[in-house]
Image 1: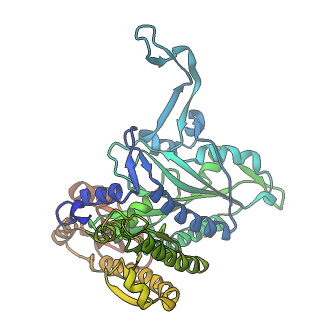
Image 2: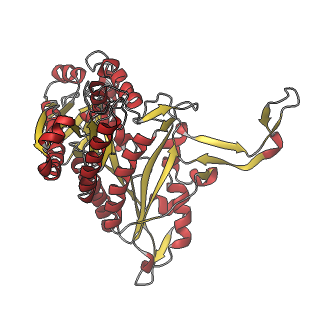
Image 3: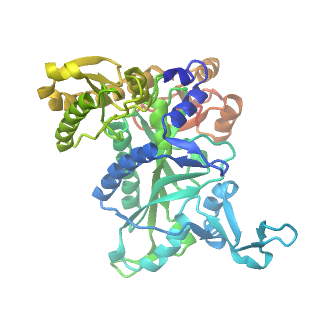
Length: 493
């Protein structure tokens, strides 16, 4: 099966596409830039969504749903936000088709069905949500308002890549309103920590947390916090963002509240979100030339059973399948998700490669002799190693093995990230290191002009001003001016 996957060393972009398509996560659709998420890929997304949804609710938020369409006048209300997303907007102008009188059987847009006001297909929901919040918030008693929604959004990307960048994608977006600036800032920081916890401890992806520069901020935000991952192609990926919106949207939509003292003030706001691009991050962080590698905590299946079935021996097959079902029931009691490969037309080697391609963390093989000896062969996807395990020890063994695989995947990814994070202090070394890929730590003079020049000359951007890397005095990597901004550079998806 792996013979049909392009090797990373040959073409890492094609390797990635092969894994998405042949691993049955997604497929191309007939709509340019959009994808069909297949059942296996959607099961992965559901597992991720369910975990994150609980984490969000555990911090006091509730779910709601807002319309897909945003009246253009509302979209324009916050100027920076509108300007930031304008080039990516899909716009609905008419509401009806009719038969083409000049071409029988074809439909055309009915010119008489033009909308009175054009509708933007949401690229993000701040406008429609804050227009609604104006009606929901009158008093300090209505605050804080902590709402999240799971939805799809449309950003008309010109260059797309399955999961990592598509014209339509799934995500969650939180939108909160607060009585004070400090409360809103604390919310922004708290949700970034929630994302970091989820991505590191569930997806096993190591991160740098930090603050975006002014030019890289979310349009309409006073401050944007982010988590940045490093993928196997040496490029960074913004894995999630949390925005302190100040009072910008409250003022644009006139969202005020009466304080305890009776005065009237604008509320303070945040927004934050992660999307299905996290599936792309997961693939590009962990997978290898054999196929996908999915962390156990979010894998659609933790275990796949592969009994040695023979089409000409149905009685033996029934015995093997019964044993698999017996073990499967015990694993289910421990919350371990499993499936049984019941196909008796394929050779075991082909099946092994197929399940490795799909990244199932643990494979359990059982044949007639294993039944006699009361053992099974257990293979782990992350190291491709095998062990013979007694059947009466299986449940405990697999439970511990899954924990070990999760931990090993994170440590391996962290080692790669750390080995490809380099501190430099001169321009020539900086350019060479950016060309090699990975994160580059360097000093920056704080000016947007320098930031833009570096981007023009190297295609590298400042991913963040990192929280966990000390800010030290030095010379700007480009202008050679004295400065104390230590930032993280990389080329990015």
